[in-house]
Image 1 (cartoon, rainbow, N blue to C red):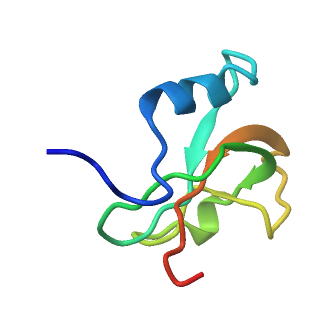
Image 2: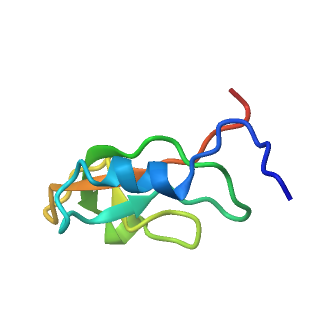
Length: 84
């Protein structure tokens, strides 16, 4: 079946984008509860490990709260927001 989805990123495009970053750089994704979305272009961001805020819906790392565990530069994979 032909994939006609708008804003799709192919595996080749993702690899091309990821090749801009050091091979040993951690990769994180912005999670949500369920489902799948198209990816946006990966970006380098700075995060802190926030063990206190971790829950089923929140990630292990955070950009909003500076903790003693960090900072870490990571590659972030963001999901497309269909509401835009």
